[in-house]
Length: 194
Image (cartoon, rainbow, N blue to C red; front, side):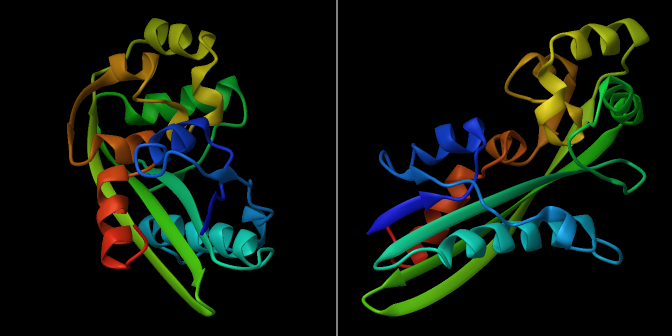
């Protein structure tokens, strides 16, 4: 069976290797802007985007194939779904909003497969609570200067310098990185795909 990760995220790629040592990476052609997020709770948005990304890649395949897509949304204490910052000012705005508070990180996972002529689809989401230390403007500027915030939802990466901003988490650490690998493995086992 061909295994495809429908994401260009280096973090998801690294984590999926814990489950499948060999797979292909095909970034999804699905345009996130084509989905109107109005009225969708952030947790539903993450799962819906993950499904759409995986399905867009899956529909381009033939034969026995497994496609896994993911999307991560950081939800501010005020309930705003935070994507990747557009620039340094946007990153600073996000980090100020998270400073000294708890927020949620949701990763949605979409799974599509074809095995022996039969097709299937499954999705799920995992939510982790994250608490930030209170941040000074100097800390925010120094973190932005690392360049790390710009390709990460919510403007931080817990697995890098951003881990220094995090006081504690309640839930799955790997979910905050972008792929809840332990749960994904169990879901794949239950589906008979491992």
